[in-house]
Every structure is written in structure tokens, then in C-alpha cells.
Amino acid sequence: MIVEETKKDVESQPGNSQSIATVPKTASTLRKVLIGVLVLAILIFLFVFPVYLVPAIQQLPAGSKTDLSNSVSLKKDPSYKKQITQLNKDIQRLSKRYNSFTSGQSYLVINTTDNLFSLYRNKKLVREGHCSTGSFKMLKTQEGRSWIFKTPKGKFTIQGKQTNPAWRRPDWAFVEEGLPIPERQDDPVRYEYGVLGDYAMALGDGYLIHGTIYKRFLGMPVTHGCIRLNDEDLEAIFNSLSIGSKVYIF
Amino acid sequence: MENETTNKPPVRRYGLLTLMIIILALIIYYTVMTMLAPAEKMKALKEVYGFKQDEKSIINDTILTDSTFLALFREKSFLQSRTALAETDSIYLSMNLADSVVSLEISGVSVASTKFSRLSMSTMLKDRNDYVISSMLSKPFTIERGFASIPREPLVIKMAPKDTSEFEPDIPPDTADYEPVNYIMEMDNGTVIYVYQEEKLNKGDGSHLFFFDLRYRLSGTWETMKSVFTFKVPEYHPYIKVRLPRSDSKRIYRALPEHGQIAVYR
Image (cartoon, rainbow over all chains, first blue to last red; front, side, top):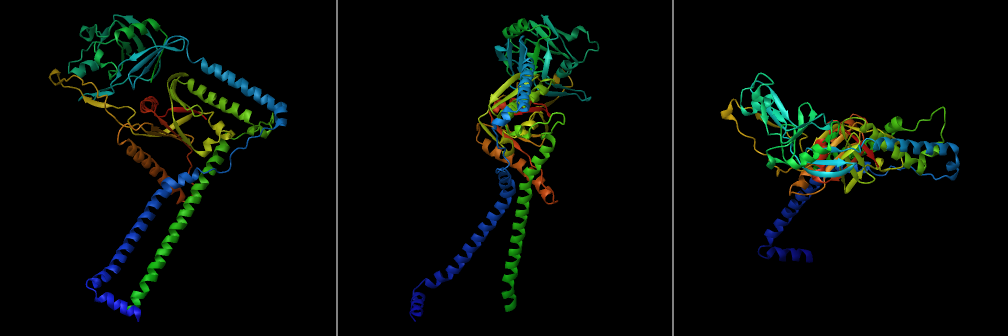
């Protein structure tokens, strides 16, 4: 009875019939939103579960961790002592072998990514600075010939040393400038003087360490594969390295 | 009409329930199969690298859990691996996880090295006292497949001019060009090595790394799903994840050959 009266009172108030009608509408919207959020959460879970959760679960300790023993009786065992002695001997032998790979002589390290050089003597760094290495340009002709201008990586040795070197221009030097290629390799047109600086050191396959007239490009990858240095660095390296010295390029 | 409206909800409810049960069953099945993977991997590693008794001189098995023996064995394994690599002319990487040092070497000569600040790895590899893992590390890892955010060789193609009138001198490269450096290397023994950029130098670096990592995770998940739903235990890949300074990271990636080798010490 009281409820009925209250209901009537509420209904008689202006505007309340409209608010009662909106209550189920709001509830239904809320329900739809909740279902949407739930579906979204399930979808996110189904995505995250195999991609992130499972790999994380796989990293949980499996319980197979090795338990260390520190048995005194084992340490007294002659076969144990023999094993430890053998391991120590192997380590000494391998360490000696490994250390022998680094020469006490002068050697040069070239970093082609940053265009830097480092000169070592008696396993100590004595000089470092900028250089220029291969440009990673691929020159292509209409006829299908191509050249890649990159500095080779790995271990090299100085195969030859030269003062006041002349540059014998290869075919690509003509192709690059749109010039006709001389037929003969010893054609005087191929020779250019004063462009390689005062010294050159050969690494094999036509690759050289030499000077440059384009000093503003030092520290940049601009060469056709050779290693360019400034005059002072070139002289110091030329005087430090002898034929057979190692050059490590990476 | 009334019957139809009263029948619909239970059908929908049961359908939903069945779907939920199926999804739950699949999740449980998937979890169980993937949880079996590390154990299967360890079993496979034990077969290859496990301790084998020499019939001529039988050794007490308890030595394999002795701390002195294992410490020396780990050191020997690393030296063995590095020496094997030094005897080749190739450029290789030496990762000393115990000292947090990564070093690029050529024929035994360290040409570049860097310290890393953040390291994470699989529980399997974390167990420093495991003979099998130490034994596995006595052989260099070889890169089988790699994924990177930068090209290994940034080649630029230039067409040769037809004559001197077409010739244009080279423009010096733009050294300010920026790209984040992240790469993943899958090794021949199933280990995956992640090298991610340590610094966030640009605004988009974080999101770039997130999507780079996600792409790789998705491809791995797809492979796992294929195995699981063909009723096979998926392959487990132990991992090593390091964060390196960008310049060092780039230098290492560009220097390492496509199928380069890595010596690991932990």
C-alpha cells in the first residue's frame, strides 16, 4: 500500500515518467558496454597469452638447477685431483695459445662503420684518428657491368710500400665520369700523379692505404674501397708498419 | 512465438559456455605443450653435450657438481671456443656475460669492445653450474638467421653517366641520418641472441623497439602454434638479451658476417 502510494506520487511529479523510461535504457547501454569491455579483454588476453605470457611462464624455474656438492672425500679422490690438474693444464695451454694471436709488433685496426683508425704497438694504442673507407655505392652501366665500392673486412697484411705513388685508374674511374675506357692497362691516360699523397701501402687485390686531396671528407664513407688518411697519420702509419704487418678491418 | 523467445537464451548461453570451455581447453593444452618445451630442449642438449664416461678411465659422476671443477670447466670451454674462432680469418664476437663485456675480434685480436649495462637470459642458461650448458658453450655459436632494423651493407645504386655531360660529382653522405639499431640472431644450437639499443635517442625509439620485438615474437608464436596444433612439442629457444650503446651495436652488426660466429662465457 505504501509502495503503491509512493509510486503514484513519483509518477504524478512532472518529468519523472521520462526518467523512469531512461533507467532501463541506461542499464541496457551499461550492459552492452560491459559486454564490449569483456569481449575486448578476452581478445587482448588471447593475444597477450601466447605472445608474452607463455614465454614468461617457460622461464619459471624448472627445479632442475644443479646442486653444488662440496664433498671433502671427493677432493681427496686421486681421480678428482687428476681431473683438476688436467683442466688447469688445458687452461694454461689455451690461454698461451690465445695470447699468441695478438702480435707484439705494430698493427693497424680500421673501423669502417665509423671511419676511424687505431694504430697499436706492443699491444698498446699509440695513435688513432679519422680515415675514409668504402662508400657502399654500386656503380652500374647500361651494358650490365657493375662495381661495388666497399672496403673488404677481415685480416690483411701489408704487401707493399711505396713513396710518391701514382694512381693507375681502373675501368670504373672512367665509367664513373662518363669517359671512354682506354683499351691498354698501361695507357698513359690511366696514370694520375699526386692524388694518393706521399705514401701508399698495398693490401692486395688493388686495395691501398693512401693519402688524399679530399681531406674534408675524412671520417666519411666516400672511397672506392681504399683507406684514405690525412698526411700526418699516413706518415706515422707508413713508418710504423712494415711489409707483413697486420691490418684488421671491421 | 512465446516458445521461440523463451528457447533462445539457453541455446545462446550453452553455445557461449561450450565456446568458453573449448577456448579454455585450448589454452590449457597450449600451455602444457609449451611448458614441456624447455625440458625437451634440455633433453636434446644432454644427448649432445652431456657427460660421457670414458671406458678406459671411469670418473666419479659427483665431480660434475663440484664447484671448483665447474668453474675451471667453464673457463676452459670459453677458451676452447675463442681459440677455435681465432684460428679462422673471420670476424667474430666474444660475449663475456659474467664481466658484461662484448668484444669484436679478428684472429684472436680484439678490435673493438664494449660494456653492456643490461642483460637478461633464459633460466636454462642462467644455471652457471650446469655441465651440459658449459659443455655447449665450448663450441662457437653460428648465426643461422638474423633480423635487423638496419641493413648490413647500406648499398646505394648509381647509374653510370653515358658521357661527361651527364657526370655529376658524388655528394658526401648525410652522416646525421638516424635509425635505431636493434637486431636478433638465431644461432645453430637454437639459442637466440637479442641485441637492443640501450639509449632512447629519439622520440620513436621506444615504439620502434616494441614493434620490432613484437614482430619477432609473433613469428615465434606462429611457429609454436603450428607445432602445438599438429600435436608436437614446440621447439624451445633459450635466449640472451643485451642492451648495447647504439654506436657499438651498429659497429658489431655491420662487422659480423651474415653467418658469423659467437663465443659465449657466462
